[in-house]
Image (cartoon, rainbow, N blue to C red; front, top):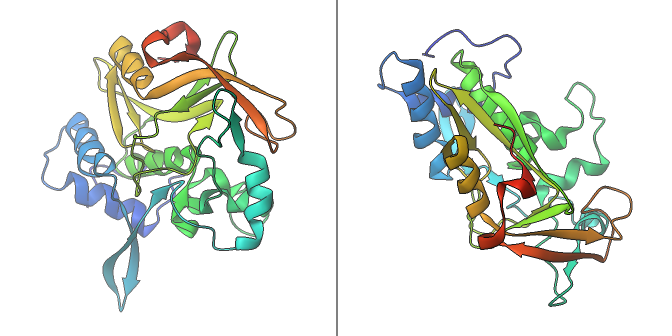
Length: 263
């Protein structure tokens, strides 16, 4: 049973329904309590299973992950790696940018009858059991919308003289301790207005950042650095083999002015 009727257009997969209903079971009738329970009991656990139906019974399967699973099609490794590899200029090693299942749709986004591009959708996450931040955002929006709860999409981008940021390597993601990517020009979150504040939830990392300036600082605390990627090539700030990422500010020196934090 859901808290309220699903919002129109919600993707009602078994995993979407089960995730929210299991997490919010028994929390009462206040909407903000349902949101908090799903955020805490589902997303912050970093262990959300794919639901399978076996002989009509719900069976919890493999945990969904965030840039965590090896490619199903190894032949795509080279082309995906060529879009992700980023060399850090002050040390000369790859900045944890490795091919994962989350990116396999990058060159296969026209499957008939499914959303396109699948890389950024609940559908893609459930097909691959692995997803980008956009897929995890979409999944979270659907989980809350199943209960009639409206959450907003938030996109954090880099500002000023920089074009990328790197997440600390010890920050765990959904379904895995070391996500295969950690350097981008943006990152997606969701927001929920509880009538007093807008609570910021990061579905990919299972983090509740809180609200207002506290949420902004908590997001910054997750970062290793902000900096510049040069020679990006086709595909954006992290596209093209051999790009150079130069960190300009480490965590303690990053300010809210270095990022567009739209809440």
